[in-house]
Length: 291
Picture (cartoon, one colour):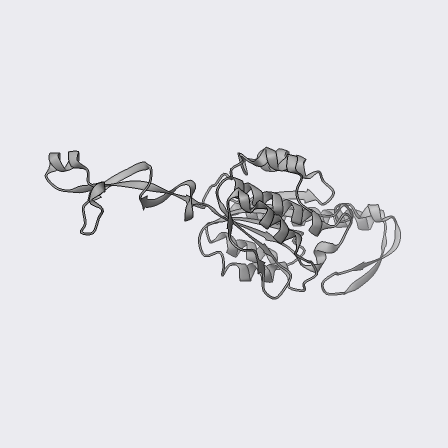
């Protein structure tokens, strides 16, 4: 399934805002620190053998008696990585977390394409992360949608293990967007290590309505099963158990939020049943993820 065309039309002019990452790949629309053939003047430097004589500044040469060349800022693309959790726990709950997360990944990838940046989607859950091709240009939007739409869920590799492997791909500072239920005790450590790469980090914590409020399951005896380990726990849902669950869930949210804040990253929470357009407008755009 592809995103609603009306939503995409509203995002055609959107552009990601950055704190740390820099445009560093390809040829794009973002000013970079690289210098070379460009449009905006950067500085002068002494002429070196092999320089293009067309870049000589005749006025400066006449004034100083020595040859200097003009340098310009080179416009580059921002590398954007959207890492989507495809582990088995993402199939729990109704509506399905993975379906909602995949739709969000498509939309966020589209924002990168429409603004002239370079995007790559990674889906975890298998021994090796399934990476899309590097895509650029709005004309590649359908290719991105089709690629994400063709991914399947159910791998046994934990999200923290997948993030550890992803660090080998994220070798240059980039915008890194993580979409996961973060049901993994090792993920906090991997988030901390990932933020050391001076990436702009965005964590979107996805949960089903039943995970947010287990009282929706009713009361009495229930069997809770870990989708990845297969371990099952029989318990009786009562107000005390539900209150304790909410306390632990809230504390885990705070842990993830604090981890991202310390790394100058941003944390968002999203129910799989939430209105996607409202989340993008109110939360992401409202907190200046993109303009």
